[in-house]
Image 1 (spheres, rainbow, N blue to C red):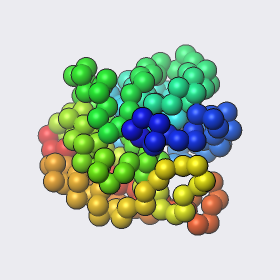
Image 2 (image 1 turned 30 degrees about the vertical axis):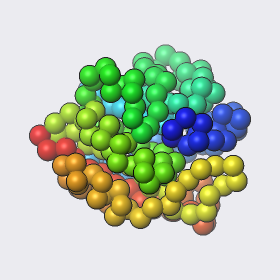
Image 3 (image 1 turned 45 degrees about the vertical axis):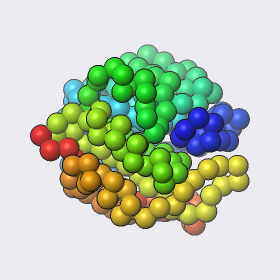
Length: 202
């Protein structure tokens, strides 16, 4: 998600994407992790690449303190409009370095990377994981979804094996605690997802 490269195609389609994103609920996307693996409220939660804020607003409604990072101005504006009054704090920042958040000194109990990691080129993965680990509180958890399938026209995506991401995380001290596979919730038969949950030791 560095500059315009990783977010290519999203600003121009923000309104259409909002309909797509909001058509699937937070509970549907995070069902396998929500009850057993996500922290009880009130926790400090960071949603990186928050899009229209569907997940961020749902977590805020559960009682969490939520920061939503979205680098695409058009999507961020839609999210702020759709979820006004949710209590979510929106931040303009971007992977791999997350310079704004990294300078702030905040730490989070849960970081979500939902349908985002595939936008990072292989050489962006290490600095991105460095930034995320620095933002995790001791005992904090990092939840990622990894996309597998053809790349839509006009987008930049990289289909890397889950082992690549797991290796980046474990090399930085994170411990894998969940791995799962699921079909695409928008019905795309040629797309499927890997779910990963990793924990920073307390």
